[in-house]
Length: 115
Picture 1 (tube, rainbow, N blue to C red):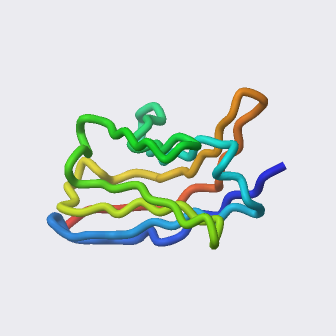
Picture 2: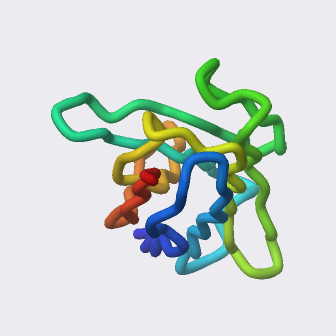
């Protein structure tokens, strides 16, 4: 089992920045791909950023160039730096740890981009 705890969400104005954190209960980065997903009201959950166990990152087209996913193995924490935020970035952001044998989710953190 892996517990994931997100933090760092909040209310921010358009053009602002936030950094989300996802702390894992144990060292998993060498075996799991780590991802950030978001779910806007009335919409399906979508992948926004993901890093493989080897550290290769990829991004949804809508956030590329604005979001950066990083991880700190010493702290068992993965981050999502979000810049130039737009109202359409609003949603609940979830952290995910994934491997072929299973997948784990955090409880989510709300991000609201509004003037």
